[in-house]
Image (tube, rainbow, N blue to C red; front, side, top):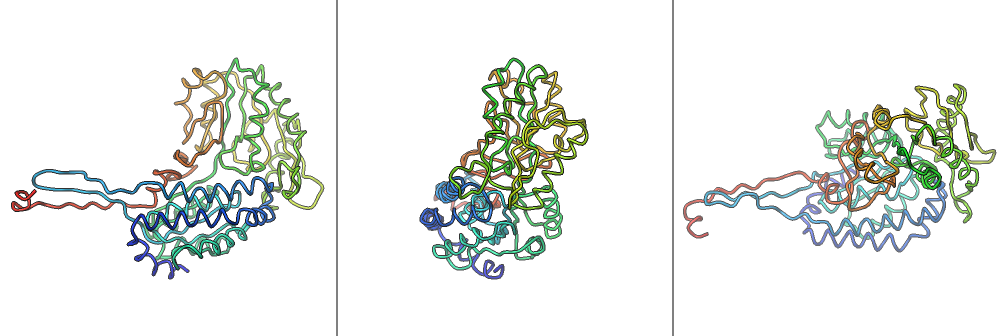
Amino acid sequence: MLEDAARAFPGWAATPLEARRERLLSCERALLGVVDPMAELLTREQGKPLKHARAEVRLAAEWFGHTARLELAPQRLVEEPGARVGLERVPHGVVAAIAPSNYPILLAVCKIAPALLAGNTVVLKPSPDTPLSSLMMGRILSEVLPAGTFAVVDGGAELGARLTAHPVVRLVSFTGSVGAGRAIARQAAADLKRVVLELGGNDPAVVLPGTDVLPLARDLFTRAMTNSGQFCAAVKRVYAPRDRYRELAEAMAAVADSAVVGDGLDPATEYGPLVSRAQLDRVAGMVDEAVGCGALVLAGGHVLDRAGHFYRPTVVTDLPPGSRLEEEEQFGPVVPVIPYDDPEQVIARANASPYGLGCSLWGDEDRARALAGRPECGTVWINTHGDLRHDVPFGGHRHSGIGVEYGPWGLNEYTQLKVHHIALRQADREMS
């Protein structure tokens, strides 16, 4: 498939931009035509509630449309008597897109669409935990895209390493863990390939002093439990003033106790299972470790006694210093609530994490705006969290990644600059 992509690249890159736009709009229509069957397959393999799977497929389809409308116009940089200098953005070549299991369709399309619009050809490798819906998407899109421009290959980490190292590939776009991102960066460096790495996050939510915490409880809990906590930009830890943190934690625990966990095909289900046994064991192990060191579970804290990888939505307090539940990304339905005494110190504590994806500040807007420059991360939200948009760049600092996705900023990652410098002769200057 890589050789097919390499052979297709010159023709696709030479295809006029307007024609590439039309192909992306055809992809949008094609996916909109299979929302229900693809969503059901996605729920069966990933576990998320069917209504959320439908929303993911629909949003992925619309992402093709949003991307098709982005601009890639050449720029005139210099216009003077002796020279004209222009700039255009040109494709890299073959792109290897490696997608995760939490949003396998949407996060794949966030790579596929801009790469194709820029004139690259794409080979997608989905997570081995969720390959089926991506393979279905590959079949659907093959009907509206030229041969060789897009393909899906199924396999594990070994296949991912072969894709990354293959000399045909010129850019690797990966979403997943920090460890895997490091390995990809090392492999890509050997051949000086470009990389776009959207890695993990350990996003803090900081409730500011003087804030009425009870109205925030449901919102904070919901933003921590998005996709059963399997969302890089979910709230991963909540910091609250010491005099109110217990009140907030207990209110969040009450929401957790009422949450409906079950089969994603059941319309009553709010939260589905974790995607794999390995992830279930990781989450359970982190909670058990914290409890063993003195942490208090206010809600949940256990694996459900049923078939599947189900963990009860969990709220934890009284974490011991150095707990992994504070310092690492749990990527599951667990949220710790941690007290603090000084807002300046708590921002420094949040920044002590090697991650730098997002942070949110909750409370008085003016006070939050005054602190918004302090978190060391790609996005600071005020009175919301994890609100991502197709027209706003998304990326992390430090261990949370390299490069950005979404909008024109994400599109530019799939291009490289090419300068056209024309020295004008005397006759040309006289004619112009």
